[in-house]
Image (cartoon, rainbow, N blue to C red):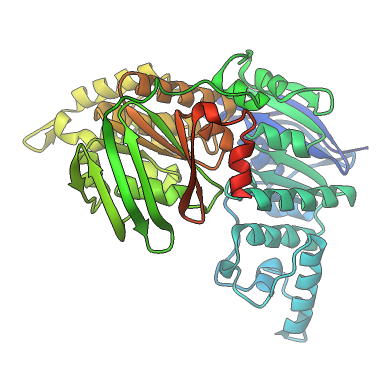
Length: 502
């Protein structure tokens, strides 16, 4: 029986039609994926189902009954709960208080703490976790906090769980643990609508996939009868066969992103470290190569990338660039040396949200567009428009605020900043996190173009398939480099790397 059914859902914003009559059915107790490129309508659909937005037209049926949600509490009272990528917990409150927030059990006029803690432990046990429910939720890992969110929803008798990119910040072992919990909940009759850009996750976890493209349901597929490439084709409207992203999807060896290293050493690290996060790192980076730094989340690759870009301060070791010792006290020092950073958290570290596209693109190159402290706006916009055209950025104008763009377009905007600056070394920390497969392919091509035109690239990534595209890969675990591989030394499935990370 269908637990959730949508018929002809429409939604528009200021003349832009986000949803153009979306229909889909989700069976009770199933794990149903919602896939699509950034801007396809996924977020709008989730907002409607969670009660944060009301549709302009169409019908929502829950268990066969027509329902209407005017606010989030309406959806929650109907049994629909949403777990977002950014968890909605109160860090300073205990685990038990977070689970029972707004519904604290009382004995007379006071909170029944003993009862609340016992019920909280029961709710966590249902999702396979045993935590000290008296401790602040901030004292636990992301995976454990996610378990608290699930327990909170189940305590409120959730019938349907909407999960929006729940694994984006989880290391691999925690991803598997989460999947075990989700499968158990589905077996108990809870219905899950799962949103992710990761095709391997969809095919490992989900029963069916609905693909949105340009505000319509472009395909309804079952994972048992299709391949990840079929979902990708439905998402982008064309086959990506033979592309870099397609090779990763098929578990095949990807072509090199770079053109191969030269004999010139651009940057050297010796004994590089930062407290207990990064320790005793040695490597040489050659002009023109694409160097991968691979590791599970928390292994130190992101911290190393930030050290090399001046965003963190080294406490040990030495850096040499162009045969001269360097010490970066801030990103500004690294920028002056020709280093640009695509940070892992682009929303808080990569751009100024309310500033327009043009201002963000020229942010690191203001002297090029100013005279006597006065900015030449025409010249600035001209340079920004050239980059928008060159990188294929989907914007209404160069004045459009960066915060309104899709994740993939935001990444292109940050990359454009370093191209305008004529940076020599591009450091990419999780460059395709949270972007769809079409945008991934665009980013890979742009990185390849940058490298093959003489630039040098470092890619720090927890996605092993991404590191395997590089000319050379350093493998990190517990803050240290534990192995180095040339591109051709890595098996197509990356098992040699995975064994080192286990």
